[in-house]
Image (cartoon, rainbow, N blue to C red; front, side, top):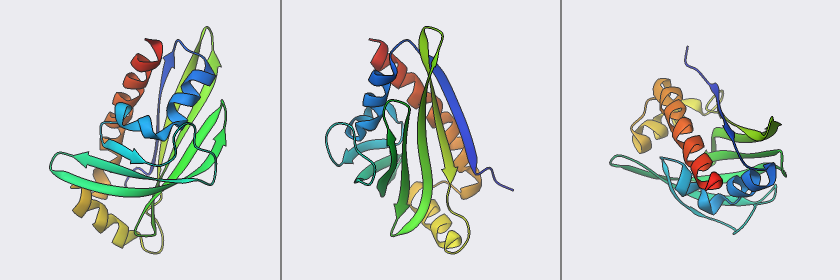
Length: 157
């Protein structure tokens, strides 16, 4: 049975407003994520209901995803769903919770490749990313740690 949800978090010395703005400006995601290389979409914090395209790379594999912001609740939560060719792939969410003198940033991932069409989406994922569905959680766990560390460094500068 493969893992379909996971979370990683980090404590950052910054305000919720700063952190939310850094993540909700999806065009800057390529600075933080080890897989995302660029985003085509609106500038600045993206509101709920808006879409953007993510351009991704892992080794020799290059792919794009269509994303739609589902929650943009500044400064506490930002969530978007990812799909490819109209098929659901994943849900990414960021929560910003005050903790002591900083803010805990929690990044979560949920695999949406379940139910009808899941086998096609899993096959597309393998072809485009080189990662079998059963290993996606491990890849994302490592990527989330990198993303959160890069975000922390960028915002604390």
